[in-house]
Picture 1 (tube, rainbow, N blue to C red):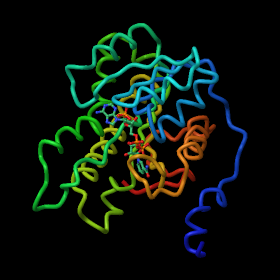
Picture 2 (picture 1 turned 135 degrees about the vertical axis):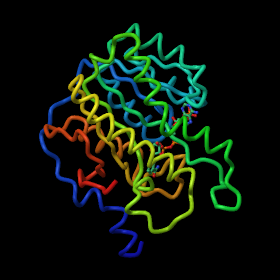
Picture 3 (picture 1 turned 45 degrees about the vertical axis):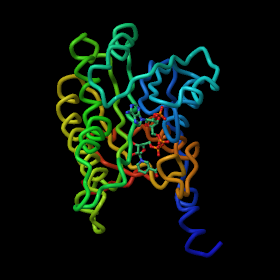
Picture 4 (picture 1 turned 60 degrees about the horizontal axis):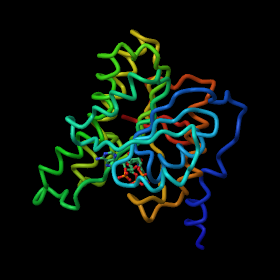
Length: 249
Ligand SMILES: NC(=O)c1ccc[n+]([C@@H]2O[C@H](COP(=O)([O-])OP(=O)(O)OC[C@H]3O[C@@H](n4cnc5c(N)ncnc54)[C@H](OP(=O)(O)O)[C@@H]3O)[C@@H](O)[C@H]2O)c1
């Protein structure tokens, strides 16, 4: 392994200093994208001491394997807004305190200016950006939003307008920029009205179905994310990486 690869691979481990933060226990936690990659890693850890409501689209098998009575999982294609009735039912039945919004797709391979697939673009916009708003709307409608303490939106530095120096990937970049904008807006709106903290996180370069060249394992990434979730510092309204460093919007 070359020096550059070694540094990239170990970046988080080298810089990461564990502090004693609060633990997350006895909460009701809704996780989107819980059935694979980063979301699955978060789900597996949090389910030990909390009740987890996990949303999947295709990969139910991964959740079945967890085999823990604290876990409730159900299918919802987040790109179809007519399909949110199961989420609404769970929202009514459980007082959800934490939402980890991790579902996401990169989108079609046609993301250059000459071949943008607009149908796919709109679908990905619903999954990556609008689904959290739809979920919160259902909570609001059922007078459940007041129970929420924290919302974590898993975004990407690919959605940072300022850091973009490569171009291309119109679908992924735009939908993550939209998520960032929604997340920032929620952090002002919901903090003021309900005291909810809303943070936006770039999970780094993680080896998952979406990124088979990633460096960090989903479980390690989940460990850092949960540490941020438990952090004594309130990260409301910020866009940060796993090292809790601010990323420009
Ligand atoms: N991996 C990275 O390096 C990286 C970097 C930056 C940001 N991220 C972000 O991290 C998040 C998790 O991605 P990942 O890397 O863990 O990829 P992943 O393994 O492909 O996980 C994506 C998750 O999203 C769910 N999902 C996708 N489309 C859905 C739909 N229509 N309805 C409901 N759920 C849907 C998937 O459900 P099913 O599996 O059940 O279909 C899966 O649980 C994404 O938001 C991604 O943009 C990842």
